[in-house]
Structures are given as C-alpha cells and as structure tokens.
Image 1 (cartoon, helix red, strand yellow):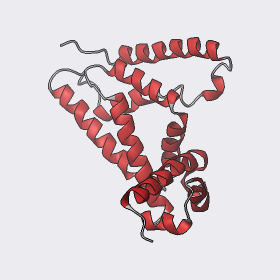
Image 2: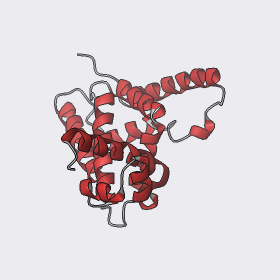
Image 3: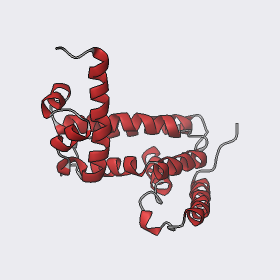
Length: 197
C-alpha cells in the first residue's frame, strides 16, 4: 500500500524532529541513522527515501533552525542591543538548538567547508543588512560589518555556552539570568548604541 501524502509528511517531520535531538546530543559524526529512524518510529529504508545521507539531513535541519532563529530574533541593525537580547533569550530557551549549531561549527573540515553551508548564506545576508545600515547612517562605519555581527553574536550567546555556571534553583536562576540578559544588552549598547529614528 502506498503511503498517503499526509502520512509521508508526518514521517518526514518525525525524522526531522528526531534528527534535531540526535544531532544536538551527538553531532554530525556521532549521530546514527538507526537511532534517528527508531526515534521517528520509522525504518532506515524509509529514512533513505527522504534523505540520501546523514549529512544531507543535517544540512536540512540546520537550515530549518537558522530560519527559526532569524524569525525569532529579527536582526535590526538600528537596534543591535535589543537583537542581542533576543538571541540571548532564544538560545537559553532552546539549548538543544544552540548545541546543534555548535556541532556544525566544530565539524567543519580543515578547508572551512562543512555540512552547514546555510550558515554562510545566513551570515552573508546579515552582513549585507549591516552594510546597508552603515550606508544610510544608522550604524557606525568604524566597524567592519562582519566584526559587528560576530561580536554581537558572541556576546549574546555567551551564557548559552555556560550552562554549568547557572544556579540550580529555578527562582535564583530566573533572577540570575535576568541580570545576565541586562549585562548582554548593556555590553552591546556600549559598542553599538541603538540608533533613534
């Protein structure tokens, strides 16, 4: 019996969800197709009906995640402090997504070509947005756009990469993270103040 379109879409979505969890835990090299298929309640044969390889699946999951991050954080070159706050919030709320992106960076080969070409495209688009903001006087031209993007991202994600330093008590953690978020926004504002108008 041929699967219906909706059941095929459902199986594909289950594979993508299982892959996000698998890649977050084990990276690209350590991820296993059989574990992804089992978690998605499907077979390895069905997996390969949708994706030619584990690397292709990672590229797809990574591109989908980049789109979700872009939608949730909305780069605004005229208000980089607020953008940094949104990045901080997103990755603390989604630590598995932070790990997914880090694995892609760690597993680039020596030539800088990896499974995650979607990252390069996303960076290029954001750099262009920052360059246009400089041209229209909404952003300091003393900085290279790529430096602005990297510095803002690193400051914004600083606490996502330090889960071991977070207080274990939930109430204490909430207060601690509110102060850390304020520090992130303040640090970015010191470098790149929001532009009024």
